[in-house]
Image (tube, one colour):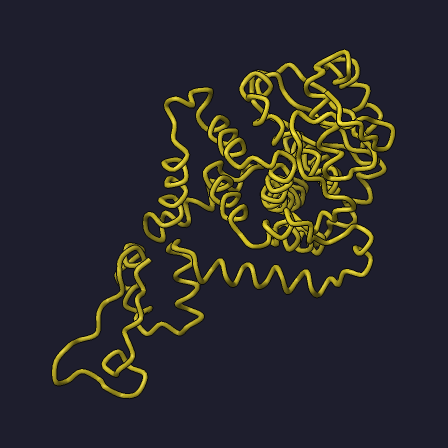
Length: 375
């Protein structure tokens, strides 16, 4: 069915009424860590040189011909239900030009938005077969969010450099230089996924569908065997569990990945959906695209710094607790180091009690409550 809306030459055909965001800026949903990681990436030594060189060398026309010749292009005649979702997502996020979308034969559930001059959205058959309509709508909105944010350019370069790194692995210095940039790109792209998840929620406007989709990507099409609350509890356990050794292992586990872990994505998205910022967006109060030129880079840095500061202070991860202790000048740090990595996983030693207890101002023996260092 159609509600009669026309948008840049295409018809808006929603399955139900959803709120639209005219002129919305990608700043509305971009995660602070996404913006700061991209700024840090651009400051990486050699990145500008590589970026400029690859922008002129990457065979984008060849890439488009490849999908055109060996995938199915979404249209009114092919995968019409996906075409409806794509046009609906572009209408809701006010994306002026609908990007071409292809379905690629691949049993692995996946989707991506690539392209230098113009974005292309690709979804795999594994994903189409796994998700229901509302879950898929969130994924399409996720990819349209990438397109609106301009992420496709960096994603394309990441794909190319990852392939190139394998080919030149026998050249020690050349491979190290490429892998440094690939690592930076992966760090940024993991953060950009958090932004795109938010865009998917703005398009689908159904948090339960977004949660279901992430659970299915993690555990397959067995919803009757899964529970959202238990799934989110895994994210809580992942962040808070273990000692400093586990914190290091988490970093090592995530480094080769292009996406954050699904439980972490689910927890981040739910937190944002319950925030005041999300409610304000749904009420129509959000940054506009025509204001982007007046945006201060310094303000973006400040927002990112505030986000990381809050994250570190509130995190239950042992490594983050260590960072907080270092910043606060924790007096028991030396003892925790002497006790080994395991000392960072348990509570801090309590001050002695009795007549010899230090009662100088500011000490735990004073009227102030002792600081709790338990991760």
